[in-house]
Figure (cartoon, rainbow, N blue to C red):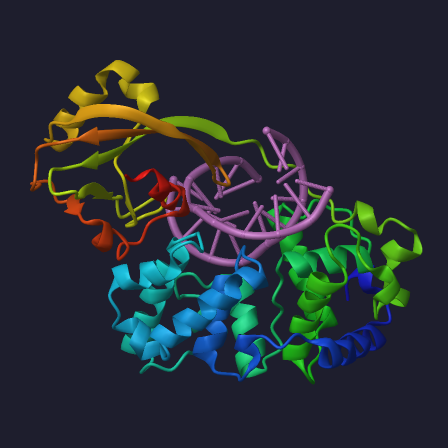
Length: 355
DNA sequence: AACACGGGGAT
DNA sequence: ATCCCAGTGTT
């Protein structure tokens, strides 16, 4: 047993937590049953994303792709359209890759074996534990940010939780604390506690079922935990976004590369002005895309913040006499057709500037 | 171990 | 406007 868990009333903590969870758990769409596919989809959506954001996406996704097989045979662009606005789009591309693998190698049944599960794209240590415990009642830890926050306070652990080795430590503690009677309620209970009571700021310790077990509360330092090093700040990148209209009132859109940021989503063409220079936009555009354009007027400025960069976008209206395009990446589309393509939120913000 | 990869919410 | 939230893949 870890030194840190000596003198810790593990059994009482675990039972109290599970009882609290049974009595207070939220009625969420993915808690209706133990269908492994539904649990899996919900856990992918919940990565880096809050419950309230996920709920409508989950409903829509299940409506369109009710079974693993439906998702396996779906068109990737349609799947991306369903994910549009949820962010971290590689999550859903990996998910579709993984369900196709399950279809091909496991007869369409989600494997209940840790080794097979973790080989699937998009399933890391957390999601593996979540699926195994929630869908299959297996005693595997599922350590997410909630769990690290709760345990850092309960056990008063002052290590920097952004460090990979510290996360491994938390997985070890979670494994030692684990309930073998009800792993699902144990894992979901810690996460639920982190979401509802043991919140990042102003935790509601007065309502906490495991208050008497919490070393941070006893010492009044719950607000100081967990310890996290600060993220470095984002680099700003200036772009000129071109809203290019032809004589048929169609707009030029471009498919982003199949790897990297916002992969395979569509956008209005963007010129990296820092590299190209304000005065060379038109010539650069013709060289890059083979289309002659004429700039008409500046429509406004928009900022879009990602976790690692900031796009500073100047919106410029332009016209062209082209009606067709050679370039595979490009398409002229009507306002109506525009709505059927998956766009990142950064470019959904352009819609009001379309005239 | 460090970095890429979205978007939403609170203050 | 600024800070907080936080899993997986790649290198």
